[in-house]
Image 1 (cartoon, rainbow, N blue to C red):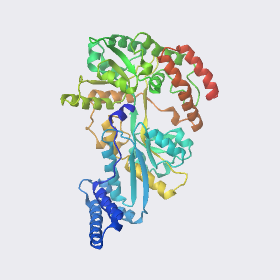
Image 2: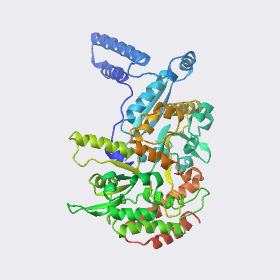
Image 3: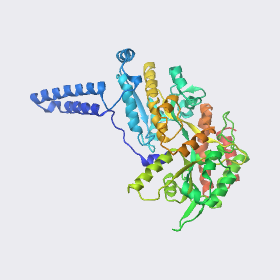
Image 4: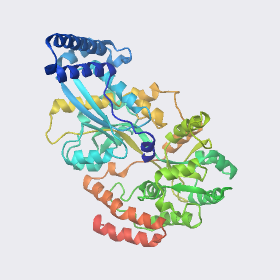
Amino acid sequence: MSILSSIWKRAARPFVICKEVSTNITIAYQNNWGMIGLKKKQWVMGLTALALMTTTACSAGDKGVAPSAATQPTASTESVKKEEKADTVVVWAYPVHQKYEDDIKQLIADYNKAHPNIKVQYEMLSWAEGPKKFDVALNAGNPPDLYFHSVSGQYVNSGLALDVGKYITPEIKNDFVPGTLELAQIQGKQYGLPLYQFQWAWGGNKRILEEAGIDWKKVQKDGWNWTEFREAAKKLTKKLPDGSTQYGLVTDGNGANLDFIEILTRNNNMQDVLDKDGKFTWNDNRIVDTLSFIDGMLKDGSMPKETSALAAQKRTEMFYAGQAAIISKAIPYYDVMIQNRNKDIDGGKVKGEKIDFVLLPAPHKDGAPAKTTMGGEGYVAFKQKADKGEEHAKNTFAVMEALSGAKAGNSANELSLPFVRQSQAKEFAGKGLAKAENIAAANEMAKNISMPVDLNLDVDKAAKMKQFKEQVVKPNLQALYAGEKKPEQIAEEFKSKAKQILGQ
């Protein structure tokens, strides 16, 4: 996601233009009341009345916001409008895709047509600073009502995550694709609603793959094991005419990105550091083999020796420059991003070689089943230490449902990710943005889903696993990339530290 943040940093803006106009007029009226004469005061009062009429007209029939059938005024919705007390629901979101702020504004506008007394106050966070801001708010006991993220044991452990299970109607439940609603549960309790299924894959440059004789279509269909991948990576590694090296595989190693090893361990029969029962699994030959696979790639030159210093942006630059045949990790949205980049190259906005992107499954250990790292991302619901009560909780869920319904499926469509709701799939049928072969590859990989293990763990074990990864796994990966430690040494340290941190 850090790559996306470097491309799109978009500021939060108010909701609807006509509301901005009336608000600005009212503010001007308030700020200057004591500084103007009687006649001007009468003029300003008239202007303010006009602003109020403008606001009313906008909310009643703004042609720029077309209400869905579900939000058309009816006797029941008119009754709701009269009965609902004024309330404000605070939403913190991220630029999920390039047009997501447009999406959220439209979804809020649709919701407000049926619920004008419920104000939805949203803020678009940056991927770089947003997580820190949220952690501060959570620790202070004042998180937003809705936060865009996957559910986490850390949030449940705070005591402020809101269990919304009792608000989910049979109609909502039946709309979700089987198994997807569970992506926002911790030990069976519902703390949010997923917006899409994230999917981690690897990505390749079609030209480079074909020049090396790699049958990428077969790989997309049947996958590949570690032996096959290492042989392919060697063929893909060579010196280029300008003296630079074309590597078989690059990953970002500075800060010891955990995605890389998590993808590989899941493809070696290890769901995570802990399994679904909370048992420590990174303590046998499987972890040694996984670390040795990475070490071997570094030693034979298929991965850069400076991997420990590579940032995510540099990794992407190498891929764009033809210095990397395959990148890890790559989400299906890369296809759309690179198509847009190719258009910018054609338009003279960007210099470089156009790339034909190929979505690839990560390789699996010989004899082990192929696994695809997937999970759910969407809105997680929270309450505050100064609890605002049951009515506010109901409003929070209603807004979350409005931000997660059929039209919200545009996020999955833009990101070329699997839909989580039947209504979303129907709404965007035939509108996919990625190339057909990559959509087919994503669907094929989804058959081998590996669910996040912390959805099954109690919150204490989930917190300890996170501590183990931060304090033990990251520095040891850094040492592996830098050639400072051997796989066997790291495996032994995992065992010893697991006793201290995990108690096993």
